Length: 300
Image (cartoon, rainbow, N blue to C red; front, side, top):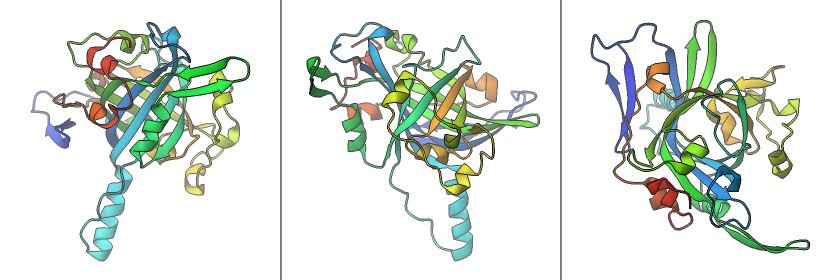
């Protein structure tokens, strides 16, 4: 019997696959973290009317985790030891991620890694708004400059999971979009490789092995410093799976995304349901960013 995990109306549930619909050789999947995922793009400085990916300065991903397997394990241990009611939920965590190539990995070029890093980790929504808003500034060489505000590009749900394939284990970041809706155009989404659903292998970079050398690296100010229990996971390896996802809670954390599939159920046996009745992104960030690309699927 396959257990599908679904989200609807903000509530998650497990759905059993009816007998006869089970897949043979179902992958062994363990969900480590689940939450909301938002995509944004920022046009280049001085560019107010972008029409292609060449007009884009940065692609951002915001992860807002709800629960992780470790959170549940820790709460269960505390309840068993102290026999107390579960603690109140921790403040909502927000991670702002920058993709180095200004797009997600190309699904037609599987195996090619795309680099990214965690720019900001916070529990304050205003910090994310400040990072996404526009800015006016002056330079000695080019005079007055305008950095446009970011535009909302996509909204959905995500999972970080462990996938056991034979004797090997790797970690995936998977997501499924709620917005733009099925009937909307997908002009910027297609150019920036933000598919309706996708699965990526995710590998965390060992910070003591040196940083990636890219144009974006020059603007990256922070180098991640993991606590001993996380740093020890690497040993002498240059990369480690996102197990646990807590690696992503440290600013400066570098990682690789590698396109695995655009059919989550076919690859992993998971069915993620989404709620398209309203946009949390618009309600949360609507006063800071334009939502036309999100709701209509057009360049703005």
